[in-house]
Figure (cartoon, rainbow, N blue to C red):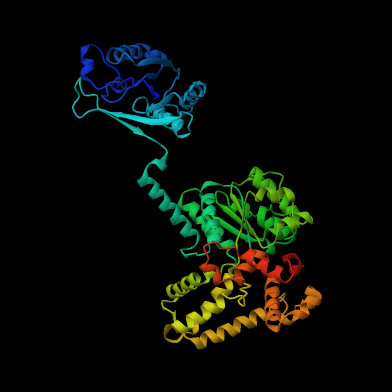
Length: 533
């Protein structure tokens, strides 16, 4: 069964007016609705002010003479000033909310040609917010007005997904934003791509706090700044990007730096200070290593985030600052909450959007595009192009993507490594000899780093396997020692699996590194929990 068509519109006090027979030679938008040859309108809800009742009745009679099957309901709407947005929107909203829409039997059209510009905007908003479950309808006069030419009628569906051209443009805009967040680097890691896709949507749609967790050097601060720059390009922020590392904040200086202080608030407070929260008004405040913030400052921060108001040190008057909070940490705040080092209520407030950024060793497939990006940046900064020769490039990438490359400093380590190679490259060519020297430097750096995993021979297989260790060939013993060592310096089973199967995983249509590693350990009677205990 076809649905009945219902048009909701305002009476045009000028465009719909007309007296005598001459009115039929004039284009009248409301009357033209029922004069279209291929359009049947079953009902018109005609909104008018009480003082224009006579004109509304005239239009009602004219429509009945042209289209007897069309019912015209006259809807008086008492608006003292139809150019006042608040008054107009409120009156239309109240009527729409009380209207008995029946979407199973009727389809609705909101006529936006008539009424004041304010009334038309309010009608648009009703459709855009789906308070009126239909589409916009626009009528236009013919080039030459005659009694038998009703002009044109156009439907405008605000569901942009229905417009292929617009959908492609919006998709391209979204992809451009994702590329912007990735700094133009062609990321190949599927999990990281998925993470950035969601972060892009959150960045442009939400002002709620965002928590970025990941090891030092994983790019938390850089990503936060890129999100801010993306929001600024969309005119969603008017203020600045304000950043501070909470590990540098101690004692009275912590609260003063964040919240400001009055003159004389404490010893050494010789002048008033605004504080970073006020400096971030209208923009983004990024608190890196938030787990280092003291409990008192955490309580003050919670109030500032929730109420947009706080007390500077030594002041009995609140100040206001409206900013978006982004925070970073290399710690598991869940553990800090459980051990009382981090406030549970603040954690709940900043944990609405929480993302874990993987370290470089967890994204071996992304090392190659990052190397190219860093070389291009060196060329732009120094005006000197630098390239690997083929053998040196293969040598460097083979090491960089292997389990031997720990990348403890993550992208900082990689950036420093490429900078050294580019600086020492004679004639702009990175040779195998340079790569040899650089790999020795990296191995030395990571070997002497505090907290290194034990060497292969420090893995006690006898303790792990018991008598079964004596049945292992030397080949199997060495292999198992290497696997256990890598497991112990990895945070998760999946992370360890990605590094161990870094080449073969690329040839698989379905990748399950964790399952492959779990089965390897089980073959020796081991579990992840036992190996990493």
